[in-house]
Image 1 (cartoon, rainbow, N blue to C red):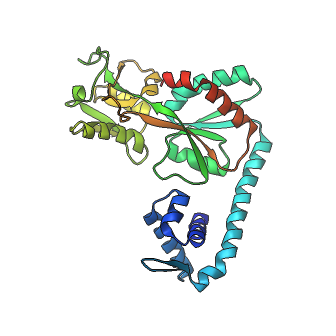
Image 2: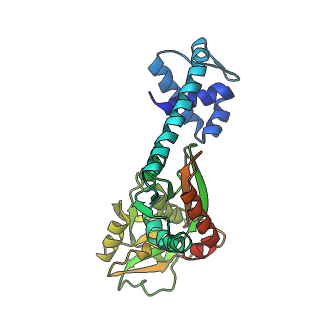
Image 3: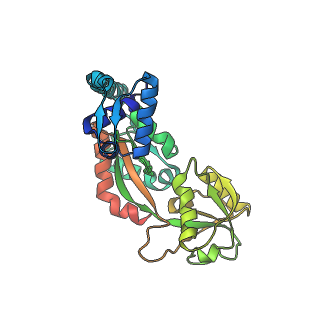
Amino acid sequence: MDIDQIKCFLAVAEELHFGRAARRLDMLPASLSRQIRLLEDRFETRLFLRTTRNVSLTEAGAAILEDARALVAQADRFEERIRTVRRAETAVLKVGAIDSAAAGLMPQLMQLLRAAHPEIEIQLIELKTIHLLPRLLSGSLDIAFVRPPDIRDPRIHFQTLFFETAVVALPDGHALADRAALTVQDISDEPLIVPDRRSRPHSHDLTIKLFTDAGLTARIAQIAEEKHTIVNLVATGTGLAIVPRWASRIALPGVSFVPLTLPEGTTRGKLILAAAWARGTRDDQRDALLAVLDENLRAIEASA
């Protein structure tokens, strides 16, 4: 049984309104309706009576309401118990980070944390956002630095830190490599290497939307998944790439990084970096890391 579907049922049962329930769960109403249909199909019974103006529980829905509440409460206690056991096993603070944050944020943050709290040991896990978030819920990560997804799991708290700016990766010797800065128009005729949207939607959309906003079409020469692969392809002359600024810390011979100038006032070409952790959890070491980050956020942001 999918506990998330039970949580969807409970939200609709308590709100008696699909729109309000969807907002409460931070998901689209269509997605919520689909989860309810799947649950009703599994139970082979209707749980709600719906009209254009009203939503009400059926007899079956009312009959399982308290059991659903108990089941969700038990699942929450189970997840918290797992996290408690993991914390008891080791005092290591397990931190997840996307690749650009692992290259740019974490070296700075770990140095600051060691100075303020030398007793805290960090285990760093570098993965994509889509792989880090489930680990927060399972308790195998205490905190992660990620790109917030469009649909946010209400069980995870996201704290926006800042926007990471973009640069253009070019092969050394390229005619544009010596420029102090570039615009989208400057690279409009260049072949581009872009990330796979399924695994890196934010980085993929970063390039596409910049070109669309400028009334241009991106000339995609290659799709790749990993930042290291993208930068390596740039070195071979396959094309240029628009990447987060901290990706320039991936030191590879044969590649230059030039800042990308954006129209004044726009946030296009900038990627949100957020800290994320499981709601309802307490962790003194995580709080210490967040306090150090907050104290030094402005200086770290300036490097992004």
